[in-house]
Length: 330
Image (tube, rainbow, N blue to C red):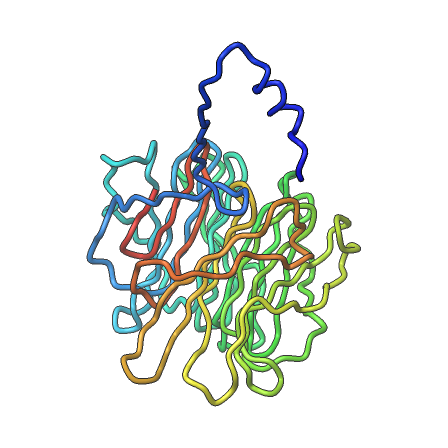
C-alpha cells in the first residue's frame, strides 16, 4: 500500500470531485534550453576557414579565408542589427593573402581578427568601435612552422586576451595582459598532429582541441589553461576525451568551435572517408551545473548541414548565431 502525498490528500478533501491533469511542455533537454535554429542566409561563398563573433552593440562580425586557388585572401563582414532581413552577402577585402588560419573575438566595443600567414606571421586587425573601423595590421609573433591548422581567441571579462594556435603536435598560447603582449608559451602534452582548437573564457581559458594522440587515434579533447578559476594560473589541465575514433579507421575530427551563451556549447566536424563519405557537424553542450574542467557533455548528435570547415557559434542578447563561410543561422 502506498500513502497519498499531502498534495493529493488536500485535493481529495477539496470542494470539487472532478480530477484534472496539468501538463507543462518545456523546450529543454536535460534541463538545458533546446535551441531552435532558423536558417537566414545561404550564399555562394566557397567553404573554407572562417569565424564569427557578436560585438558589444549586437552587431555580428564574420571573417573568412578564400580557397588556395584564390590566394587565401582574408575577408571581413559587419552586420548591424542582424535579423531575418539582414544582408549577409557583403564582404570587405582586408588586403591580406596567403592566410593559413583565422579567428575573431570581441569584448564590448573591441574586436580583434587574428590570422597566421604562409610567412608564419601571427597578425591582428583591431577595432575599438564594434567593427566599424579597423587599425592597420600588426605583427604579434611567429609560428614555428607554416603547418598551422587551428587558431582561436577569447577575451577575459577585464579585456585581457589570449590567442591559441596549433603547430604540428604543439598548442601555443599568446596572451595580452593590460595591453601588453606576453611571450608565447607552449603546452606540456604529448600528442600526434593537431587539427583545430576553440576557446572561450569563463574563470579560466576553456579549450576544445581536435587531432591525433601519440599512437594515432583521432580525438576531440577538452582542456583548460588555468587563470586561477578551477585550475591554477598558467597550468594546463589534463586532456579529457570528448569523442574518439581508432587509428587506421575511416573517421577523423576537426573544425571545432565553442562558446557559452548559457552553458558551454560546441560544434565539431566528423569526417568519414569510407564508402559514401561525408563531412558532418556534430553538436553538444555541457550538463547543468558542470564546470568545463569536469568534461561532462551531452552525447554529441549530428547537425543537419553538410560542410567541412565547421560551424562557428556566438551568443548575442536573447539569441545565438551559427555561421559557416556561406550560411547563417539564428
